[in-house]
Length: 295
Length: 274
Image (cartoon, rainbow over all chains, first blue to last red; front, side):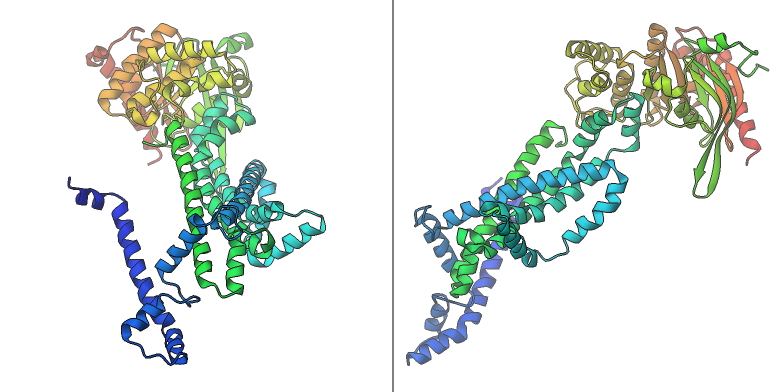
């Protein structure tokens, strides 16, 4: 196979096509969205300009309505590689702050999600009493709830990473509960009857049948949950921006109209989320392989 | 005409000595469309070392009857004793091994670990488990497949693994619910022969549900013909071939005669409902 064919056969090529498509549209959009700002700028300076001056200008503004992709790339390059990771302007610094809250929130959320699932599966009354509240909890906009959680926890002198992780956990427990309940209930009647013929205890049935059967469901949920955790941490940081993080970066950017900074933080957050999902996916793959789920 | 078991009124001691003793057993399921009688006044006694087939059309309650013996369903009326105990007591004593219609192997366990599952639950030591897994996989000709996952095996091999699993804790009673129903004729013949050899060697009692006449005649010492709606015992046919029979007996006139009786029984049982 020629390298070109191999490229077309794999995942890389289709993704690349989409990326190129998005970048082209983005540039066109950037030109049009920043056009009148650029015209005003030239007019205010009483400067004559050609069409190419105008287009070039739309892509090099300090505070464009929509920054061009290369401006964002430059900003990311500058704030990731150009600064010491301990600098308050470094995206690495903010990323670390966000990731810390995300991972703690993810751990708490997953543990809580699994615990709720186990309780729901083992007591029908708990399903009736808990499930409506669990669903209701997810219908409240997190952006409205986050500041209240921070304020209330502050009242009890709980500050720092914990309130942020709490909000992160609040978003991430839900998919884990739903997926895990489904997974724990996935064994078919035959598999359950088999346990009964062995007079297996509830505990044995749980650990030898329900738990292993739930693993594929759990990982599917964990992938959703880890991304939700990051969203939760970012939202929390917008409420509690003094500690830094991507959310603080977004907030500061919007205060000062630093659109490039906002976009750079957004992309960095998206990148982190993608990496986290990928990491969970890799663990999923390794575990599935051991459990014979991967063919 | 052969008698329907029990042949004579027997004492309590005699009943207790039997592997299975069923008297006037009925079972009614409560469904959304009202009660459905699955079993009606079943009488059946099975002695140690017998190979008894339950045969009948779909819906005749043969699987339900097997499930009652296994304490997976509970009878509405009548009495049933398994090894002189109630089905529940017998189940708690792990008196039987059950082979389902489907292999019901756990997909996340290798073949060896699937066979070891009942042994783990019963708390056997690791060495004991390994030894028994090996012995029983050898018995069903699956040595060398210990580390494969179920999906890597053919349907027939999977069902053999499930038989090895049922044998692993060495129960005296094997309850088999159409274990070869989903397999093709050639594989089925082969497994039938293997099962027969196994039964002859281990001297276990087998209760075997099937809807195949040749399978029932070939395997059984006694065939219980059941009829549907409600499920009842229509006829019990003795099947006097030697224990070490081979597939060749299927060519004999005796075999065909018994097969014909079973067929007639099934047709009669069916006629008054349709």
